[in-house]
Length: 323
Image (cartoon, rainbow, N blue to C red; front, top):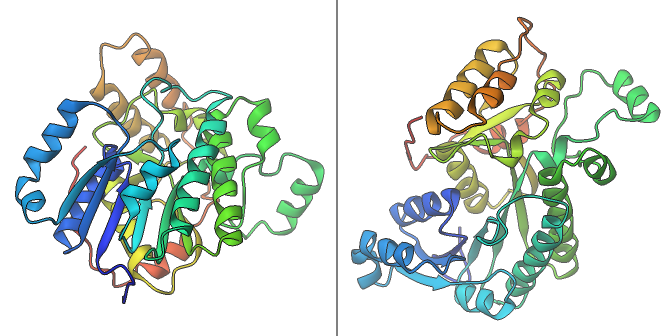
């Protein structure tokens, strides 16, 4: 598509699992990439520079150190870019999702969207959110239960939002943070006329997957409810690039290519978690809790049809991640 800022795009945070994979694929697709890293880890910075020495010397890759709570550092990273791929990574000194993480994530989202509004070359922002901003609080009161019964054939989709009070009551901090941050981003994007789309991904299946992943809080309830979904890293990267490049993309997109709804699925997931850190003291308890003693196949009650239609015919970047 024709872009005001040419083919330069910014990836933020480029040090994260998704961000680093996006950098690789975008370079392969011919983009010039501004890799914005939140980390102040000099070793990681030097490693990135060594890995992409050729791209840096040819000015196809520029590396920035950005603080999501520092508006001006974000402005510097997106300067001259036609698009931004944004995903929030918790600060290294505050890595645990709790009741306060939402405040940090909202401030970061506000700074990012405002910086894009002030950058004339930006055509589109791809905002990474989560399926946890969609699934929590469904059918939790009489009115919603009655509505669900009347529309039983209509699965959960992008039009749904997690209930903030429900997330607070059950300490679902990941869902709470993703919901309030995405809502704040959408409110500001609409007010400032920023062209934004969001990707609401399932549990990310990648080499970094661990039992500490905050997405897994409430896994049993998601499983029984028919909306426990996961996404492979390569598919998630493709989805981000597809919604960026397709001029018809709009709004939110639920993104997953795995549905975990039977005991075989949970056993596979438990084995993945165990293989990452078998000696962790929580390993036995966590993986056993993932293996639901249940031979039923729970009906899938969540749909990614909107994204599936958009990605028909999309030429994949062919990023292969083996788990």
